[in-house]
Every structure is written in C-alpha cells, then in structure tokens.
Amino acid sequence: MAKETVICTYRVRVDAENQFRELLAEHWSTLRELGFVTEERSVVLRDVDETTYVEIFTWVDGGFTRAHEHPDVLTLWERMDPLLEERDGRPKWEFPHYLPQDLSA
Image 1: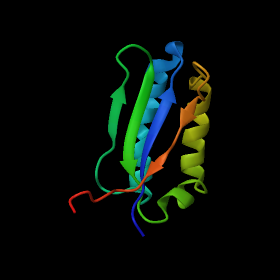
Image 2: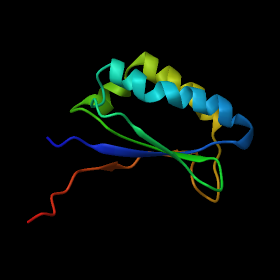
Image 3: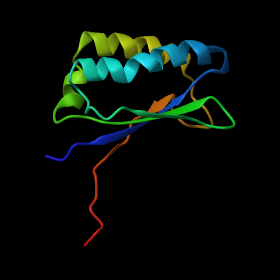
C-alpha cells in the first residue's frame, strides 16, 4: 500500500497564533515518536497575508487510523481546535490525503 501524504490547512485565529505555533511544533514530533509518520520531517508554511498554516507530512501504513485512536494525539488536536476559526466559508482545518504519482513514464 502506498504511503499517503497529507496537506493540513489550519486557519488560526489572529489572537491565538503564538499558542497555536507552540502546539504545531509538538504535532509532527508527537506523531513521529508514536510511529505514525515517516522520518521525513514535516514541512510547515504560513500564508504571507493571514494566519493560515499548512503542514505537509506522510503517514506510515496504518498511521492515520492509529493516530485517530491514540489519546496523546487526540488531546493535542483537542487543544488545537479552539485556536482555529472558520474563514471565508472554509472550515477551521482541512486534511486532504494524496498518493505519490510517478510521471516519468
């Protein structure tokens, strides 16, 4: 089974950016310590005009399902949730998953 890469989008409340950044700094390392993501460190980006963050990382096989059942991960996500807001008709956060594609052929 191919490993899925997730592109997480977080719409952070302006007044909560510093607190969110602290939690986001824990996110990938928690997932990694628990064995849910690959060793390749997450990529974190911030929108230049507003407090929207993107985090990109790859789950190990089965990591997505196990993360959604682990109390340490669930607690971290629960702490993140109130720091986010719906914006421009978009949800607080989004987590689309992608599969790698070989276009060399």
